[in-house]
Amino acid sequence: MPRQPRLIVAGYPHHIILRGNNRNAVFYNDTDRRFFLKCLKAAKEKTKSKIYAYCLMTNHLHLLLEPSSEDGAGDLIQSLGRRYVRYINQAYKRTGTLWEGRFKSSLISRDEYLLSCARYIELNPVRAKMAGSPKDYPWSSFGFRAEGRPDELLDEDPVYKGLGATPSERQVNYKEWFKRSASEEELSSIRNAVQKGGIFGNKGFFDRVAQLKGRDVVLRPRGRPIKSL
Image (cartoon, rainbow, N blue to C red):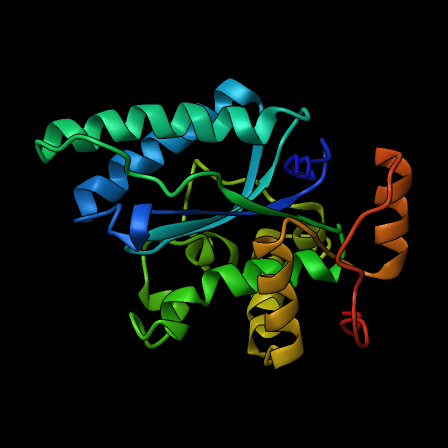
């Protein structure tokens, strides 16, 4: 059976997960992480993409990426992967595959679902017990979005911009949003969407994407929608 085409829509955010092969580590120390972010910034500029959130774990990473073209996400991952794998192979005298096949992705609507996905990404180290608070983990976008830490890699997404008229207002309101506990239903919906290449959004967004792509989209939303801000 032919593989289902990846659901990518230019100009919309996508949650992307890239894992190490056999769930092995892809980052061994902070030098690796710094070089990876340098590679990511170069790939972002090359593909004219936007990056709204990220988190580097030990054996995988999360991105909230908005590609400028249908091929933008794949081109960014390909460019990023080539340069970083070459660095890892040279630094650690290794050969072979670093990444686990195709990256996982889901399409995210431009509303409170986008904020929820960013929160999910930035809370990964806390859920994994690598940090007691997202502010204690330096390898994510939380410092930029919640505390104003400079980060040349990141862009402000339109929903985040709507949280306040000034950077300080946006940071305060984003931290308030973070304090709201994510339900198990929300966490499950985010995981299900990205693992199966689906959509994280409300029914109206599903219908709009189906119209844009000219085909039905799978993984219909279940349960009640996330409450508005």
